[in-house]
Length: 185
Image 1 (cartoon, rainbow, N blue to C red):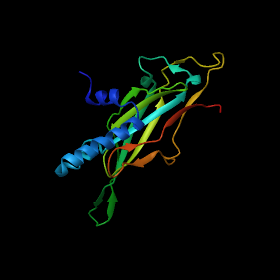
Image 2: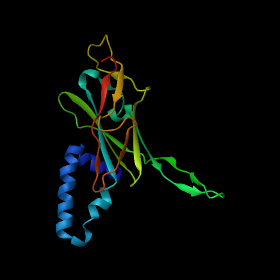
Image 3: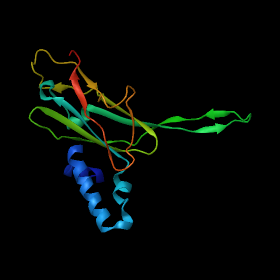
Image 4: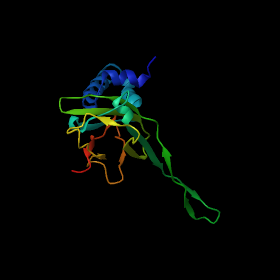
């Protein structure tokens, strides 16, 4: 049996498809069960959706799934302070690994390939997303074949320099696209 979020991934292949779906589900839940108005937020409110997109001219990963060419990790800062024996406040905050995200191929279009991802975060902490190309995965189909590109990940401008963000206060969080680009341009 596939994992639960795999079923959701088969139905909703991108954040742009998921957002209207989630909005409709929430409206139905709120309209038909006023006492359970937070049901959708409770179920999906801590989810983070994102996509990695690249031009078909950059080729494709030689792997069982395109998603296998990427490492997507999340971590968050848990802020904590303790009072020491001398009464001085001690910062015991720590960076904690986040839950493993689900990655899947698509949705593709005529010009681009995509890998989508979903993970469950925690409020109110600040999260950091780390997206990398796996160096062990080779790529094929580059254009021109005799000049393969050096690929790198470009983070969305909406994330600050350290790649951190906070979850939406209500509903799922949708990140802007991460891009695979030719490192020479």
